Image (cartoon, rainbow, N blue to C red; front, side):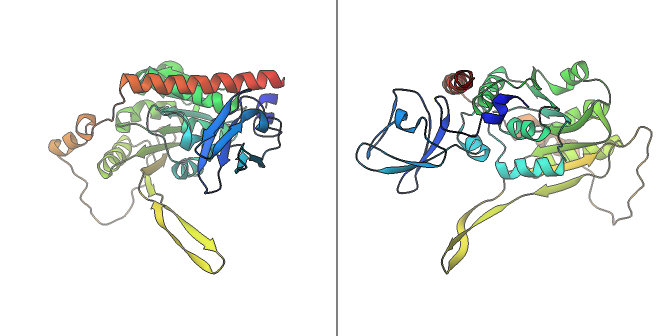
Length: 333
């Protein structure tokens, strides 16, 4: 582990650090510390220089006496506030991905697509410096935002992370040898199109995990996994998180919760020429027609697009954060 990785989230605040400020009414604001800069609210001005050099978790006072709690954002805080190209995988699902795919230190992991880099950060933390994360993304503007977000949080470009542009079905066989990958995580519109190349890359016993948003996608990918004969029977899960209000004797569930965001489906790669014993179960409706398949196509499902103008703005924000974060660690050295 490099010195940069060790000091990133500890010690006094430094120029280039991202700081989460909590005001008297609980409102959160995240800023990047720059010497000579100020943070303005409708209740006064806070000098960045007043924060630089303070210990983490300090209380700072602005020019009119309003107090703010200053904390370094946790990874869960950072991914929810970072610039986005594509929608992110929520922390509740990222945690389940790490658990269900059994992401371990030193693992070789394939991820597609990279989106805005939120899941990449969780995976990089889990595999450690001895592992390798190979990410694949079709859209260059998304990969640019992801690179900058990862560099912003870590303070450097990780040497054990690569991003390959292009379709996974075409690029994975060119970049990863057969049976060289421990885990594959697919976050894409039509993961069933990549099952064959993933099967070739995975080691026997390796885990395939797919993150999909709709029940039609879930059904389609499950049947595609079964049809290969290369995997154990897939398991499907959905995670919901509900917070609780706890204050004295006032203990009750929160009125709001994080409900459906997506489904996780996992299966393990069988050894070559292995035939999975058939499960004895009641007959179910497993057939589907061409019309059903048409409903599952990317065109029918739809893919959210982000305008070029918005992407350029988000890219500039992400790149600026990455530059400040890298400069901070260079100054610290």
